[in-house]
Structures are given as structure tokens and as C-alpha cells.
Length: 618
Image 1 (spheres, one colour):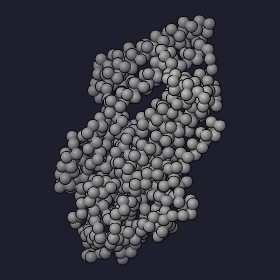
Image 2 (cartoon, rainbow, N blue to C red; image 1 turned 180 degrees about the vertical axis):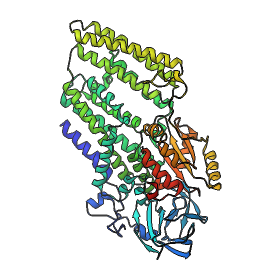
Image 3 (cartoon, helix red, strand yellow; image 1 turned 120 degrees about the horizontal axis):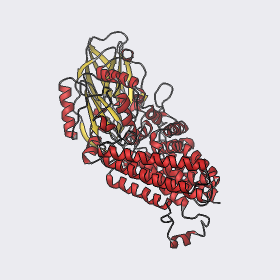
């Protein structure tokens, strides 16, 4: 009965987000047929339409060559629709744009982005080219608009042959997502079928499961399984399933809320108070693993639940669900392209159901290896005896390590090293005591004694490194060799202290015709660290951004100043690398929202910052 109820609940969780999901599905020509802008769930039932115009009718675009080196780009926006001023972007293949002026728009209180400058009705922009129009020249218009009803369209792109002004590729929904450095998952959300979207995000989650973002979840789940007194293969699978589904549901809800409000919940959870609270939970769980007390529901609550859950001791399923919720909020800060794509889609369209369903599928993909590991751990781990008690105590040390990993996001490096040193000292004593019980097993005895000695030696090294101001657990003595032993080149970053300073820097850069590259960074962001260690230390990348002003925004603290900077740039979570060309225009379709290797990043930087064609960039 319980298994059937759990299965039904999981099916409801999977299908509910799809119930209200909406899509704009292009046909073979790239256009969205009239009357087909229905919700995905309604389409599955063969019913429903929301009455929105297809984008090529809501925002019809055209171009005209008015002089040898002047082009007029025109939108005849339908009544009840508007274009965002800061979403307009222009590029000409085989030529450069010397300049253009955008007319003043109307400032509105947009439900998705707040106060924004928009254009109603006809809009005409004159583009002055660096060279006369030649045969084969193609103009690309990037833009985004919304309906007065509050529903936004995804970013759009249209291409025109300048020789005769004819359309080359027509309208492309989410076309900017396919641009170099863009996020194809955004385009998929805008124009894919329900099952294609869920499948793609599930696979993205599986890929994310093998990154450092998921490492903390392995000891958490393993510790839950090890601490279960009724452990078996089936029981371990059930615990793992509850843990993963709690993580997935929380991930989807937090993502949908972030997209609708414009404030990522995960970013707000980086405050010392919240992280300290999470760390305290893991310390409490560690103490329970050491046998200082038993974690269970109050007796009065247990007596009421005993009739329906007699076989659940210690509230282990409830504990697995609670830890799944906490884990989703912890790991959610490790953002990547899939998470950012869903957040941007929800923010632009208001379609929290489809974005939430995509995040739910992605979280299940992330949890698939956890199901395998948790089930295998419960099946093969010894069920009782002194060995099991020692195993639980070992996971107590793991939980303490997770707690230190969390507080390391806001504590000074020497303090963190000192905490690791204390943990290794405690582990060394525990291993020494364990070795005394293994006199009947010489091989285990010698192995345990060796591990105790190594833990003690490493603790001494960590304490030495902490005294010298070090910060690396793996290289505790690196600080003794000097402040920076890495001799590789790196980007000469500039820093700003506020959104006002950043705005002033961008205006000065545009006045001096200098492009700008902004890196939004945080110490707790895994992809940010990878970009810093690999991409931004590559000589090819450094050469590609030469002449531009590189700016690093460190939002590790997530204080009011950091949130203001994120809001100014319309960024949910780091990492985000943002490019402004020499005219001060941002190429939003070329934002980097995950880890990108040096070669690909160098091509993207040359294309965006210096106007090189894709062929030249290679």
C-alpha cells in the first residue's frame, strides 16, 4: 500500500508541472503558426489556445538600404505588444557597424523586469556601416518583446540579405541561444516539445551529477543509509528515492520562484547565518552518528504516526526528505547552463510550470547516480555488529567535513584550515582507538595504525599552514613559498564597488570606444573557480581580450551591494561572463553562463569584443 501511494505521489509531482506549461513551437520555416501557442498540457489533450499572435506577426521586421553605407531596420509592432530597448542588437556579416542611435522609448513598470524602456508601435533604427554594402552581406536583428497581458516571448532573431532586403532565415524563436557561447537549452525551452525538453534536462542533470557540485550529496545520502537500523537493499532504495525526490521537488520550486521574482533563492542562501545554520544541522547529525543521542521524532508524535507507519523507526524516511530539501538548496548555488536557461526562460515568459518541470527533470537526472550508490551501499554494507557502529562513526566525521565545507564560504582561510586540522586530529585519535580493537586482524590493525599516523601528520601540516596564513587543504604549506606560486599569466582584472561605479565604467568605456568584459564570480561557485584556474589563465584567452577592459565582480558575500550588482546586470547566479562592445552595447545572446574552455572562450571573445567573423576567430 505504501509503495503504491509513493508511486502515485511521484507521478503527480512529475505531471503537475507540465499541466500549465506553455511553448511557442516554430514550424519548418522557423515561424510559429497562428493559433498554436497553447499550453503543452492542453496540447496533449488536443485542446486550448491563448490567443497570442505568433511572434512574426506581433513584431514584423524589415530592412531597407537607404544609402551605400546606411541601413534602416524597422519593426511594425502590433497593438498591445512592445519591444524592449535594451534587448535590441544588430550585427552585419562581413562588415561592421560604425554607429546608430536608438530613439527614446516609453518607461513602463514591466511585470517581468521592473522599470524598463520599451517601444510601442513602429520603430525605425538607422545603422551606419563601416563599409558600403556588398553582395552577400547579411544583417542579423536580435530583439525581444512582450504582450501587454504580461506574457513575454523568448529572444528572437531575424536575418536579411542586404542586397535586396529579403529575409534569409525568417524569424527564429530563441535564436540567440544558438549563437556562439549562447545557451541552446533556452531555445529548446522556447521551441521544443514537452518530452524533448524533459529528456534534455534529465540528461543535463546526469552530466551535472559527475561534477564537483554533487560531491557533498554522496556522503550525506550514504550517512543516511548507514544510520538506518533496518537497512536492506529495498529499504536503502526507498530512502534514496525519498531523498532524491525531495531534492528534485525543492529544486523545481526554488527555481520557479527565482524565475518569477528575479531573485535566485540559492543566492540568498549564501549568507553566513543560513550557511551556519545548515552546518549546525550536519554537526548535530554527526553527534548522533557518534552515539551521543538518538535522532527521532518526539514520543507524542511517534505514537500518533505508529498506526500508519509502524515499521518506520527513528523517522528515517522523514529525515531523508528533510535532508533532500536542504541538499537542493545547498547544491543549487552551483549553477550551470541548464539552471540558468530555466531561470531565464521563466523570467522572460512567466511560464513557471514548464521551467519548473525542466528543473524537476534535471534534478532527477542529478539524483540517478545517488539512487544507484545509495541502493548499493545499503545492500552490501554489514547490517549489525561492532563493525557497523564504527562505520556510523566514520560517517560522523564525513558530516563534520561537510559542515566545515559549508562554513568555509564565509570564514577566513586560516580559520578553515584550523577546523580541518582539528577534524584530522580527532580522526587520528579515533583511528588509534579503533586499531586497539583489531588485534585479531593484523592486516587491518597495521592499515588502521598507518591511517591514524597519516591523519596526525596531515593535521600538523594543516596547523602549520594555518599559522602561515594558508588556505588550501590539499596544499597547506603553499603559502610558505610566497603569496602566489602560480607563474601562469592571468587577466589583469579591474574591480568596482557598486552598481553606480559599474555604470560609470561602462559609460567611460563606450566614450573611449573600448569593449568591456565582466566576470561575475563567487568563491563558492565551482564553475567560477574553473574559469579562473583554466580559461582566464590561458594565453590565447588573454590575447583575445586584449584592448578590452576586464572587470571582475566578486559576489561571494551576497550582501546588498552584491545583489544590487546582480540586479543591474540581470544575473541570477554566478558564473556569468558578459560582453559589451566598443559602442557600449551588450551582446546578451553571447553571455557565458557555465564553464567554457579556453579555445571556445577565445573565439567567442574575439567575435564579440572585436567584431571578428567566426572564420577569423578560428
